[in-house]
Amino acid sequence: MSSIPARTRIRKSPVERREEISAAAIALALEQGLLAVTLRGIAARVDVASGLVAHYAPSMDDLVAATFSAIVRAELDDVRALLADGPDAIRRVGMLVDTLLDGSRDDVTLVWVQAWALGPRSDALAAAVREEMDAWQELIADVVADGVALGTFDVPDAAAVAWQILAMIDGLNAHSLVHWHAAPDRRDLTRRSIAALLGVPADALAASP
Image (cartoon, rainbow, N blue to C red; front, side, top):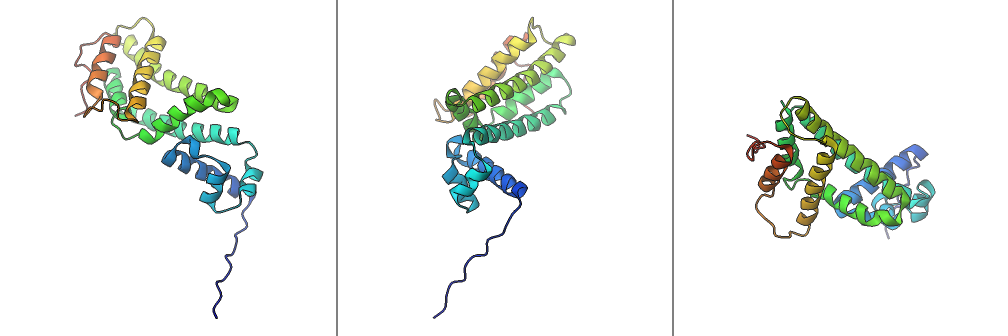
C-alpha cells in the first residue's frame, strides 16, 4: 500500500514571509476587492495557517491600508509616467480621461470604492485614502496649472478644478461597477464637461489618435 508523502514546508525568513503576505493581499484585493483581504483569505492564498499570517501582520487594519496604498500608488505612478509623454497640457488632460475611463482599471476602482466605504471604521485606511486622494489631486492640479501658465486654460483656481475633475472621474467609474446606465463609452461627455471647466472649446480634449 503506497502512502502519500508529506509536503515539505519551506522555512522562509521574516522578510520573505512579509513580502509573501503583502503580495497575497494585493492579489486578493485586485481580484475581489479589499473585503477579501482577511486573515483566512490570505492564509488560504499563501497556504499557511491563519496564525502565521497574524504573527507577521498583527494588525489587519494596517495591512488593508498598506494594501490599498500599494495598489493605488502603483496606478498613480503608471498614469504619471503616461502623462509625461503628453506634448502639452491639453493632450495630457485628454490622455488622463482616456486611460481612467476606458474600463481597463475596474479592479482598482473597486479597491477605491471599498476603501471609501471601509475607511470610516478604520483610522489607518482613512488616513491612507486621504493621502492617496491628495496625491491624485496634486497630479491633476499640476497639469492644469501648466496649462494656465501657458495661457491654454482659463482657470482661476487649478487646485479646485483638479478636485472637480477627480470627483467626476471617480463618480463615473464607481457607477460603472454596477453597469448603471452603461453606455458604449463614457469618455466623450466627460471630455466636454472638463473642457468647460478649463475654458477651452468642447472638442479640445479629443480622443487619442
